[in-house]
Amino acid sequence: MANKVYTSDFLVIGSGLSGQLFALKVAGNGTVNLVTKRTLTESATYRAQGGIAAVVADEDSFEKHIADTLRVGAGLCHEDVVREFVREGPNVIKDLEAVGVRFCTDDSCGEYDLGLEGGHSARRVLHVKDHTGKDIELALTDKVRKSKNITIYENHIAVNLYVKNNQVEGAYVLDINTGEVERFAAKITVLATGGAGRVFLYTSNPDVATGDGIAMAYRAGATVMNMELFQFHPTLLYHAKIRSELISEALRGEGAVLLGPDGLRFMDKYHADAELAPRDVVARAIDHELKRTGADHVWLDISFKDATFIKDRFPAIYETCLQAGIDMTKEPIPVVPAAHYIMGGVKTDTCGRTDIHGLYAIGETACTGFHGANRMASNSLLETSVLARNAAKVAMVEIEKERTVHEIPPWDPGEATDPDELVIISHLWDEIRRLMANYVGIVRSQKRLIRALNRIEFLAREINQFYWDFKITADLVELRNIALVAELIIKMARMRKECRGANYNTDFPTTWTYPVDTVLKKGFVPIDS
Image (cartoon, rainbow, N blue to C red; front, side, top):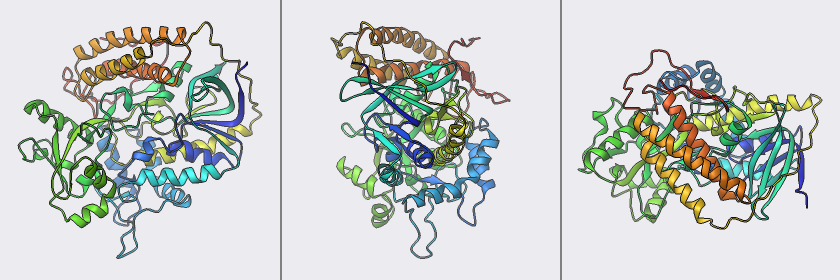
């Protein structure tokens, strides 16, 4: 039986902040099919603890926020993009409050209770306790589920984009429950699949963060940019059974200090801003301390603060630590750096448009140049929101042009059979993630990158053969994607022969005088010299 066909004006793949906000914005002007590979709320947004950076205080200014972002971005930020996005901050806050988000306020004056995080020169992080992303995601989900023009497809994972004459006409999507590959045709296709933290062994990202949108866009012929720039968050909870639990930078903003295995503070030796230095600096400092001492983790201590304040300001983190047998009001928290956020992605303009007609990328899937070489804390939700708003504006105009939804050919499984050894998929998945952790982590070298590239190219060929020989499953789709994303990261890390922001290569300790973006497109072979 031929696979099903679903048509709409807009096809949105991904259900984090960017995907859901875009869907809500365009729903009044057309039909939306929203595809997500788990549930609507399974996203990196849901896990975001710190908050969203925006200039809302009288003592702050756009120029201060712009200057902070440019400084932390290590010279690679696109200043025009930074200026545009920062100035949209107050409008983003109004948008989120309009869908029901209630940011914390100071009871004594009624003003926003603004947090301070690494890289910021002023308090400008709006938050909902320490579970900001969860509140944003739930508020958006409530509105999306009530929208008559948005049809939701949970447990559906996009496999490939369908491209004809450099025009994306939709996508092939696997219904995980039935195993059937269905056709989703649309005038506009939007990739909002989030990041790619699962390409590394240790990450704060949810299981869904396998770089699907980036991989699909690259296979379709879109340009990717700065993929080597992967930010490692300095403080992931170190625990044998509880994984991927982030310990927010907001703790350090409220005075928490990092302690070595000997119980002594060490960040003041690495940077004048100590614990509030940019994330790349803090992550490398911890990495150095771990390698120097042979320890498994360092400590993050806020126990010297009032216990009532800690429980009120960080209720979710407090409960998580209790589950791990740690009372953060009385003892320090064991932490390690972990892959957290990719500054690179599908190259887009400030409206999310890629270099393929009909294809947009927003959120962490996209690379606009806003973050440069290192993302400043809580700037991600700002960029995501502005990009979704901008994309919605231009996409609504685009569908008014006389474009029709074109038919997508049926999915052809060829001679594929049921996979007989699924253990191969889990084995390959584990090998890639360990390879990336060992050779393409916080500190890199050319020798490590060459070894990693040789191995990933071999694994990619094996995975590709597996993909064509057997019927696809969600695990196989994700494996294929992380293999490609890993290969892109390695290749572009070899292209950047300097230390800049999140890219630290021991063979190139200096920084280029003139910052340059790395870009890669299917069919282009980078020259290693």
